Length: 63
Length: 149
Image (tube, rainbow over all chains, first blue to last red; front, side, top):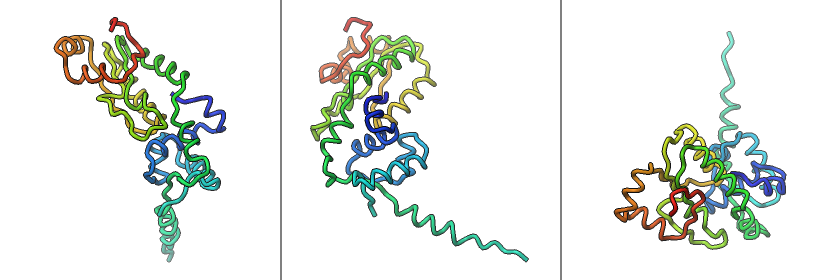
């Protein structure tokens, strides 16, 4: 049930899944591992995408 | 004699790992615009879902509600008795488990799911069962309907 339009627009299916997950669960914060498990994607790719999203300030680190 | 001295490095990475928690930045310039875009469900999405549901067995009725119909721009989401309700027989359980797992992964949250066979549904429907009544009287959409409801 993905959205090919958004996947293509954003250029990454995983990026869209991460955003969807975080918006659905806002304002909760998660570790990379938790996110990867919930969206069923590899942790390393998930980490890379999160890092990218953090650089453009869409997401932020929480302590 | 060699003793292993590799205890320092993994410890270090463990600490770094622990500190990394991510959340959306509400001060992001397009926070709400991105929200509507990401949470909006598209027509293509529904069609794919109908296809997958129909593939699970002899599906008589499939109803979506709750999270699938919630307006992404409103804060309070409609809390339906089920987000997805399926009436059918000869359901392939393995396929069903798989379908629900990937559905939750795509949507980004857990969904409330209920399955009944035709006989149970007929009985509950005829006796004005509370679950069935609340679901079918509230906001919902029948994505498969082969029993003329």
